[in-house]
Length: 197
Image (cartoon, helix red, strand yellow):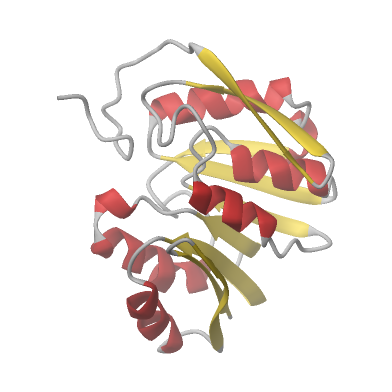
């Protein structure tokens, strides 16, 4: 059995196909591989998150669990004034993200970081964090993304997350530590949740 995509143990080193995605006249060309999440298409959760992104005017933002880089690259194209950080624990995802950054000509305002969750970032660093978290990694990981996220956001910063399960549980956790938590969109079992510091 091959390692889960949310793992440092991925062994694939090849890239075998390209995905295209267009939203708001922004077109992305993305290389993909079997060793990443939703490898042959943009999954419905990511698509819904992209269609509901709250994009700041400037500052540092994080695409947490970037996979092949779609959210981070879209942000970098949508607003070149942003400094977009893209992180993942999967080394194949990191390689693909770097390749896709070059393919989409956003090298100037993107940085790719191989790490688990927030471990290589400074506190109070981001104006926004975006994630389609790895549900298969378990609720403990999802909760850690929510509870630790507030430490890495600047004052009035936002964590924007899409979930296919555990919406109410996420709201309960978030309401204990964030000033405001709300679901801004629901579709086909997915929910977009905004946590505001």
